[in-house]
Length: 148
Image (cartoon, rainbow, N blue to C red; front, side, top):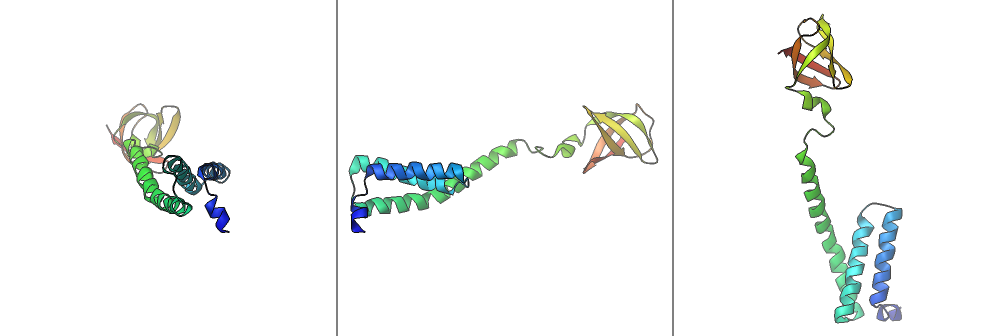
């Protein structure tokens, strides 16, 4: 068993790193990627400083453990980029405050309005077709409007 550790070399770490990254492609979950990256870094560092097998294992452990907070920081910064478009996947909320022309009149509190290529059901005070209305509230696929 000790021979396995003493023969750990630069190439073994590089091969292990590539194997772990390949396994990540087969079973994605981000976890094996970071272990593979830690193994690759140990392999590259082993080229430069030629450490003992104990040091190599210690470097792998430290880099693998350090990869978790690094990944969380990276994921958090990626998540903040999605905040640049707050209406992504919230189409109805993006319509609030916009004005449209009624396609069908609002009778007994319901009517329709055409927004781009879609006809939306609207609720609000009775108004004839062709009237301008402003969206004041969005609830699912129904919009509440008021006279513009």
